Length: 160
Image (cartoon, rainbow, N blue to C red; front, side, top):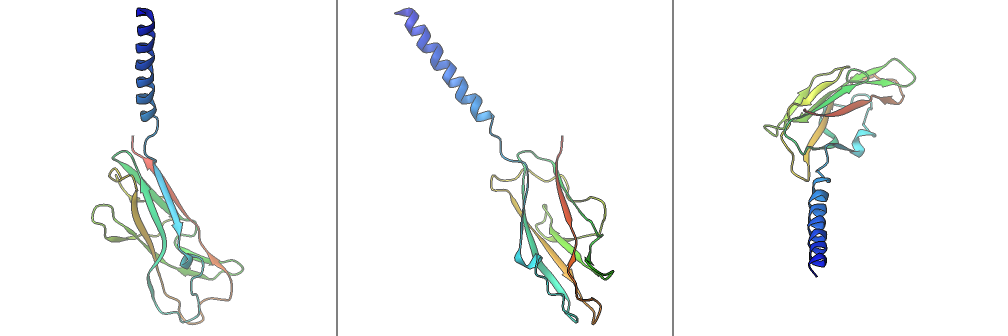
């Protein structure tokens, strides 16, 4: 009977350790999730379009289970929309939500990665939601009829 009790107790301890180990294997995610807004793919680029300010083009949710992370962004065309079949360009600016104040700040144009979140705090389980907004102006007859594009690359870097 004693041997059977020892085996059962050992089994219970093993099961408890297994459950404890399992809870350590599933940390919160680290990274970013980008949801593009429809406005990002259907910009009004008609000649004479007045200043377009604070147009929401993406919602970005930052996830980190550790204090200290960075998010960088860079533009393939140095913050310009380039014509597919011509050399016309449309320069634009971006704003992103600051993690300390919650206020938007201007993102300088850059063809190299630029930090837009520096040493971000540990996020809640639902992530920290931020907004990426765009500003631009089209001068009369500045753009030929064409498809215009740019690629923004975002990178999440966890601090060590």
